[in-house]
Every structure is written in structure tokens, then in C-alpha cells.
Amino acid sequence: MSLTEQQKKHLRGLGHKLKPVIMVGHNGLTKALLDEFERSIAHHELIKVKLTVGDHETRDQAIETLRERSHAELIQRVGNVALLFRKRKKNSAFETL
Image (cartoon, rainbow, N blue to C red):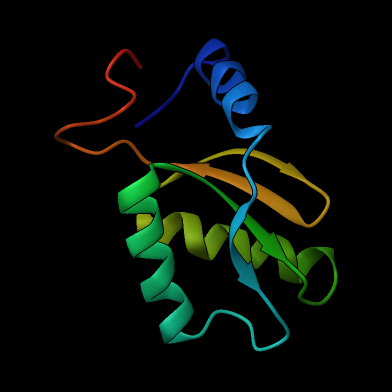
């Protein structure tokens, strides 16, 4: 699913008020964390993830792994926080996107 810049801008605005739902710590991407991420993005569709792992490359790799495994779209990354979006197939709160 590819989003236009206008759609991403809209989602960034919606994501601004969100608190991080998932926090990735020094243990990295464990099986339990990946399972919780999958449940959270399936429920919320638009979520913030806070990463406190290693350097920039490690954080970028962790975000990319989350994105690839969940088939989510990276909307924005600012510092240690990433905003990810995956639209539900049915009953999406983002039907207009």
C-alpha cells in the first residue's frame, strides 16, 4: 500500500497527539514484542513506536524490520519515535485514505 504525501501529511497530523504504544528497549525486537506490535497495529491502525536501542543504524534497522514484518507504512521518524500505519481490510477508521 503506497500513500501519497498528502495522505502521509494527514496521518502525521493525527499521529501528533498519540503516545507511543510500543516501546523497544535494549532487548530489541523479541518474539513477544513483535506479537504485541502486530496486535497493536491491527487494533489501532496508526501507532507510535519508541525505540531506545543502540545507534541510528540499529534503530533504522529495527523500524525497517517492524515495517516489513507487519506490511505497515512508515509515516514519520523523529529521533527515537516512529509513526507507522497499516489500514485494516474491513472496518477501517481510515476508509477515506
